[in-house]
Length: 288
Image (cartoon, rainbow, N blue to C red; front, top):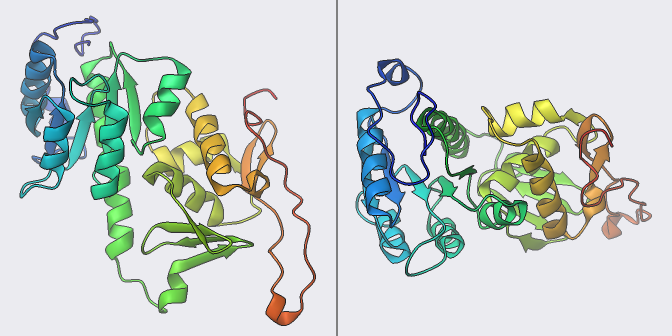
């Protein structure tokens, strides 16, 4: 871990100094944060630092306790989840949280390889932070995740008009239900993470329009301090889950767009169209 002064620690983190400047920024307003960390020293220091920053933080040591907490009478507003827990794998815990609730999850772990990042993001986490990290960066990521998830909640509960169809976005075989945040392809449900839904919905808001990588990061991630490759990881995961990778086209050197022509409507005798988009894992890397 690291203090805001920039001194990094791989074990126990010292008490962070008071940070009045962070209190004036969006969040925390006493937001409840659940720290899922079995390391006694690190977990204690995290809770203490978060409380000093204006959050209401608590800690559990096991995945079983974390799952019970998120569905309890006072569920957290955000979860900081270590992957290396004594009773169950953190990815399994994240998946369990996502099955029960939309509570945002930030994975906090020493596993920094790309494969580990993918395995940490795929179960439904909203962000991924590798130890050691700076405490100020952790707070910034928490604020960013809270802003994004608050926007999603207000979008679900806001005054939508126009009936059920107003909540549906259709593009060929793809349908997004903005109210329930569900996705279907050819009528079959597709399970995606909260971030994957946001990314696909961002592209589907204006099908055919090329969205630059920066536009996507700003629109979906908000404040992002990590590797730009996280976008390619998410695009690859969405393509695999949809089963139609050609629906998301890579525009080399620019970004991505939702592409392809709509599926035929048999009831109207429409001829079958040919999907013209091209997609595949790894096509969105910079400079390609």
